[in-house]
Length: 313
Image 1 (cartoon, one colour):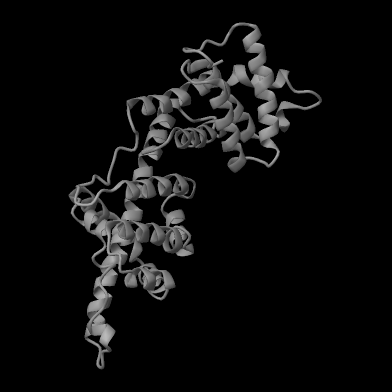
Image 2 (spheres, helix red, strand yellow):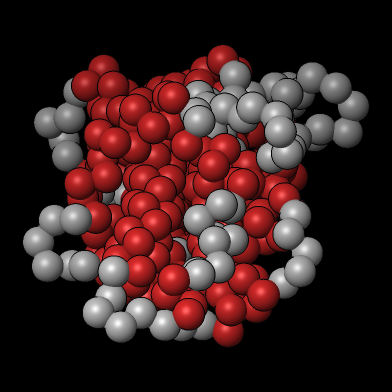
């Protein structure tokens, strides 16, 4: 589920917290990292629960309309395409998904947020919803497309939805783009009349978990050495003037270059430069790239870099 870039972001967040608190213990911080990564799957469950709650509301809404004092024809004969959406029906037969979403679904009904009703009403009144209901192509593919549209237009950009996430976890705002991309991929890959496992392990494989732990530990072990190296490459600039985030990203990139033999150098460079665009200043990518180039060039001259496979150095 979680990508290598997302793993790097989670490790970065944990390392930033670790280095910011001199009383932190590495073992405890590492457990915190793995807990934060596991919580990413909780965000997936929370989003699924909202989709299912909106669907429940739609069913009740149509039943309530039939009981109006003077019901209209459309109230008595509603178009049931959304109620019978095959993607949602596939979710409802996944026992593990239902068990987990039932546990968290209460967050959408607390207080006076009324988010379920608001999202459904906005969607119900939209041209997209009307077009979906009136489309003669009643197919699994059209159901998939509408759930994607529902996610994009009515859930993921909803302010109240974002507020709920921020209250639940300070990291979920950062996790959302990665989880949203994964959810959309899951929906696209569904096959009609075939069972699907919506809940998957947060790590794709054991290698990804090992990558997260090793990157965390080895960055800590090499932190002082790399900090001195960065200081030696600065001209007319004091190390204390570098932002903590820029310095951390450089340390993580150098850790990958030196400690992960199967990782191409350019991949490591590009990953941390991309991450810096979201978590550092506008000019950070130029600075980070420049410092990394200088240090890695020195390591190459000294024969310190060992990579497995051709074209990785």
